[in-house]
Image (cartoon, rainbow, N blue to C red):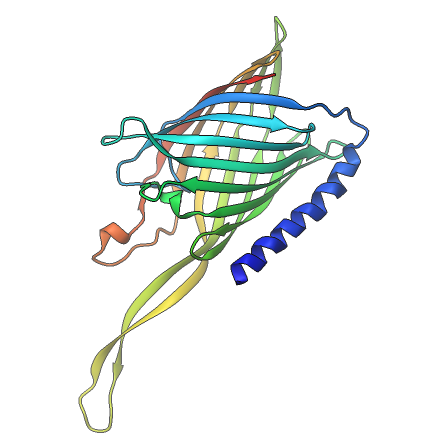
Length: 280
């Protein structure tokens, strides 16, 4: 019941925030757009956490932009690894708002994600049932500053926070080609919930002290990962190519003593996402 209440409170926050931000863009031209794309991720991970097979992923994507700010998207995910050559893992649906303030000094991205994974999916993030995100960026000519937060709903509810910096470079090339380069650095934090087991000494009257095993649920707010990335986008008219090389450094892995199958797998690693998108 508490999870449902939190989820609807977040929905209320979004529905209350979007109209206030959108009011500043009310004078802009509104035009519906349909976009399709195909993307490849070289190493699927969740804050640097990976499955045991270190899977890569291919995901086609379709987006409908009702206005310049409001959109809905869907992306089926196909996994490739040593045992699965091209296996459907699930679909991710997103409803979001992406817009700038009238002064163009403030960028907001608020969205709700609903993953629908197969029951036998091995992906680390497959336990996620729903997620709400809000990210806000203060734009300036020297460096952009971003802050954000999220609510992740699975069997339990976790809260996440992030902050980062980036600087956008834009180059107009011959033939109406635009090149964008955006080096970025981010830190991600969030709550982690796990079972902690320890032993304590207990005694009764004159009986010898004995070790008693105690297990308790623990929730901690920790740094989850640091990430460096350098997205590159090349666009011409309605065609867009992108590649986003990234290096992730996971932190505070949850481990279970003598149970490696229950412990998080991780690796400081380089990975990239590349794709093409067409707008109609």
